[in-house]
Amino acid sequence: MAKPLKCDVCSEPATVHLTQIINNQIHKIDLCENCAEQKGITDPSGYSLADLLVKPESNQGAETSALSCPECGCTQREFKKSGRLGCAVCYETFETVVSPALLNMHKGDSHKGKVPQRALERATFMDRLGSLENDLKEAISSERYEDAARMRDEIIELKKAMEAAALED
Image (cartoon, rainbow, N blue to C red; front, side):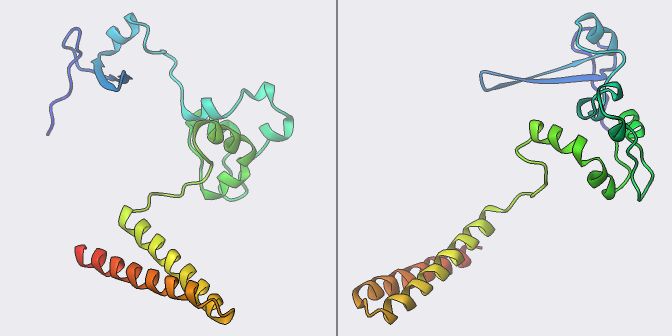
């Protein structure tokens, strides 16, 4: 079992952990609640993701604040209180509230995941190979034999590169 982190100021158990990047250097500091408050780092009332996403109900139209999920019954008020949506349908129900906020915080409002580099390279190879094969057929049908020969050679080289990459895996 790992030992709890100690406050960098007073050696009490740390509950506030800050990470800051300055001039491409990572600086970490661990503070107890008292030291964090003394330094003005914490807000005793706290905040949740919902506080960032949902505007106060007084600033929104009545139809938005009355929204509730037809699947799980989660309301906008419950979302704001807990910071959590109840189910997958909630994302559709509260889309007008959640989507604009996510667009401001991230590159998009849908999760695409990561693609392993080798899979990306393989897909690029396959796309290029398919394109070359289509161009080769077109060049042959339009009797551009010099272009067809160049494409054929490029296809052979591409297949060799794909085989070499497969052997490295």
